Amino acid sequence: MLDRAARKAVREVEPRRDLIREGERPRAVNLMLDGWACRYKQLADGRRQILSFLLPGDVSDANALILAEMDHSIGAITRLRYAEIAADEVEAMIARSPAIARALSWSELAAAAIAREWIANLGRRTAYERLAHLLCELFVRLRHGGLTDGDSCDFPVTQGDLADATGLTAVHVNRTLQDLRRDGLIDLRGRRLAVPDLDALKRAGLFKGNYLHLTGGAADRAPAD
Amino acid sequence: MLDRAARKAVREVEPRRDLIREGERPRAVNLMLDGWACRYKQLADGRRQILSFLLPGDVSDANALILAEMDHSIGAITRLRYAEIAADEVEAMIARSPAIARALSWSELAAAAIAREWIANLGRRTAYERLAHLLCELFVRLRHGGLTDGDSCDFPVTQGDLADATGLTAVHVNRTLQDLRRDGLIDLRGRRLAVPDLDALKRAGLFKGNYLHLTGGAADRAPAD
DNA sequence: CGGGTAATTGACCCGGGTCAACAGCAGTGG
DNA sequence: CCACTGCTGTTGACCCGGGTCAATTACCCG
Image (cartoon, rainbow over all chains, first blue to last red; front, side, top):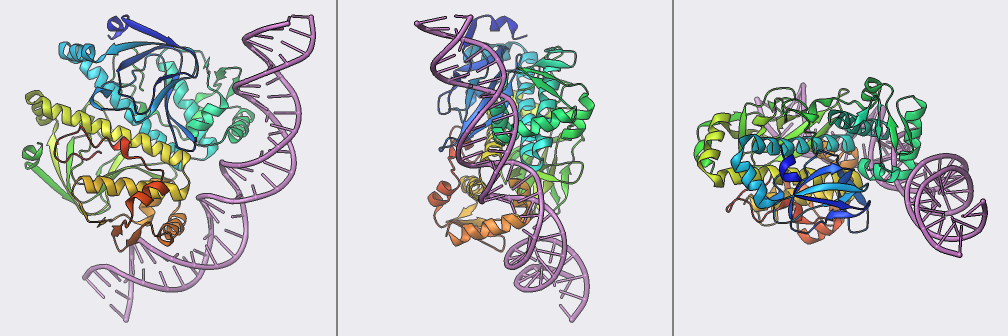
């Protein structure tokens, strides 16, 4: 698919570095190759909100090229490898192959669907449900991308990050994770997450995977945003 | 722009009726003509979250046709007039005119940008800021669509709706609106909103309009989602 | 005037925030 | 090998923004 173009400009950044900042003009479409990143916004007084996680295989802004400037930043969580695909190259690929156009379009829509689910998550779920839901989403997306190992996966996100993603504080994330552990729903230690009973976790988070639209996208592995 | 195609199938629904429900297959792209609608999700136990407001001029799902089924519902808030544009017709228009393709694409992206801002709003702002921010957004969007009259506009949303949009309860929305009134930031009575000092309201809501991307879209009037 | 929806108010409570200390652990340099 | 540093995770005490419950009061419309 995009793999060919992706070989061109592979970049690498250190953890906690930004790929691009709010206010800048988007340079290119980025394909995540290895490591985790996130989109986030920061309020004037420093409050931070993570808007989505970018996992290997995800495409950053399928056609952000239409918008004049970024309304949020993208930061690396781990050391990160990604491929920058220049605007004109994307245009060319779209023109050449309807399949690619469709895949990119699908990726945009899937990202938007995830954003909508997050709105519901932040607006109407308790801390416990919210974390359960987020962990479900990440686990399912990773599994769909072939990045899980049985019932476990790498999980490089700090509790502070989880707080910024769920609209909670780090302290309360800590306590709520303990609750989830106590209830046997997760095993999260040292950058590694295990989910012994995914269905139970889904129930706890009122998780319905339909919003991920995991059928109908690119055939092989084309996780959402 | 889309106006020509829009004349074809104009529909009308009563307030509080759904245009389409979660789980259904999207039938067509809808162009809002008159009245307000919203996207929303409902959790199993009835908790409801509004995901976005659809104002006249907005397009519902520029190319939802790619996704197999709706992951949320769309409901009318007021009596609503809208135009249904069939899938194949949209395809044809896109093929015929790159300008239309671009406009639709832009509309999608703008909607996604708004969704991201809502995530930050729900996650990191207080009730007071959150309401101020939402009112700012709606007022600015309405004004951009030529739907304001000086510093005021129609505002058919109930406090219950505002609660579902901001992740609060109706009771607390009521109290917070009173605070906003007391501070002279808004005048909201009988389905009508006035904003005597928009800049002050923006400050109160930590509102930065950049995420609306109001420049660069369709030339005339092309509000977001 | 009656019925229904939306707005408002009061009393009380709790989920989650705040503040502050402390523990674990990896990396780093001597 | 160990002390030092910095980040992340953990815990406790206390507090407050916002939720809950329930009653009233406007409106609107026929």
